[in-house]
Length: 254
Image (cartoon, rainbow, N blue to C red; front, side, top):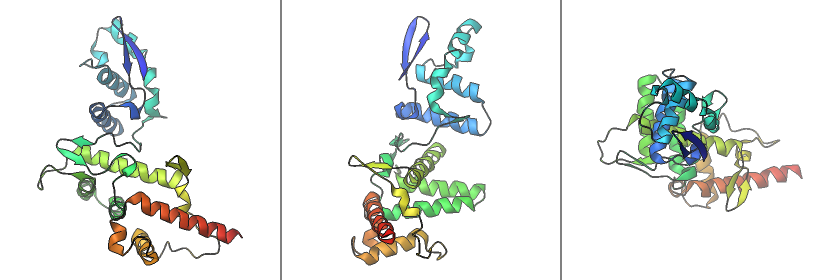
């Protein structure tokens, strides 16, 4: 938390993304979308976010000039929300466990997701890169439905929820690929799953992708049939893939 002084009172407000409440995160994500679309600039983003976090009810720039200037001078306390010029949205925390009657099927770091849904979500991300804007919205809606339980079968996916769902999923997937992740107090470098093994031909062009990986896991019999693999918790399968790749890499070094 960070401190802001206003009207003789000291406010303790969040100083980073993970400290936001679900209500504050909704406002933050909306502002981040506006920022990325060029609707507001960095100053506008900071001013509106500070007002939201302080519970002022109005943009701080709407105050009398002398009051506004004092608040604007303190906007540096929001630096923890920025990575360079851009507001940070990437986090493994699920900051939106419920929204407009939609309840999340997954927790922080996608805990609760099964491997089959993980593979389906990755396929959806691939579709996003090849789709026009209308098709992208449909794919984003499907991803949100994969990660959230709707209040009814015909409920329309809220646009903000769709943005959050793809942001959370891609954030965790990027973490899996790029940085160690703590599992039961041990930092595990899952990125080795994606590294080639010297002397072993790459399967990148066999057109099976993660579905092919699922079939390989099923062939090991560790989790059972392909259907059973797809209903196994995501992190159980990733740990198996990590250990198998770790053993293979070290075997090749002998």
